[in-house]
Length: 375
Image (cartoon, rainbow, N blue to C red; front, top):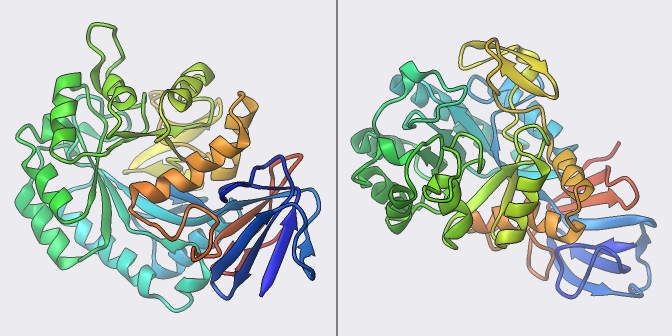
């Protein structure tokens, strides 16, 4: 058995980041947590904070590796790089593409999931399809690729890649009868509302049919208006919707981040990171300008954000660390229905990130009880 003692613990019952605590694990499972003096033989990590590993629900790429085109070896490299951010699980995200392109993309993702050594890297928790069933706020998604939702195509894809597709972002405009939403939720897929200029009422109709997430709230959505709150209003108002947030301090103003984080508990952080070093996304050239990747016309095109940087940004604008860890770990796990991740407690996976208490830099990442990253 291994016991870590630290200056603080997030995500464990009765523990806080501002009081000493400890976490014990045996093999790949946590056996016990506590506050105060640890059991004898504990490894004292000093001025550190222990937290459950981060879960990124929306990450398009890492470095020069775009998940839409990644080989099995590139997946392995990208996932290993994510461990350095404190990420222990993620949903590789595929942007809008022609329908006949998705089979090959999912086949490669499936290969990465089954590859030797996959259990020693952050877990591929399922693929997130962000498009092509999007609406009136496409952002960097090429409008020529956008189309109405196709339930028959989705059914075939889910049959061929059982359990691999975990999240699908759809705009209400692309699924006005909610047939695709009903199909996906009946198959256990998380439906997210995004890239939409739909009304509040149309968004709620989709929630009534099972949609449960709002993809990168504020971004790729019609503007909030007090008489026409739109998707943003639905995301912040309806308790059934979990808004995700991009906390790079470029996509969303700090005041709007604080507003969302303070409005409801179920708010999650995502990076929406792209393979900036590759120089393109969805076939379009991108460059980094003023802290974020952009198309040639200045349109934001994902981020160069990491999960640990998102955490530090949220703390810097005044959100308590324990709350931010909840948004980076616990709530994303809940979105995916994962009960053995996202918190530190008896029986949960020993997915642990060790943060420096002063700088909140990642000191090490532990995946199922094994060290996956150390500087």
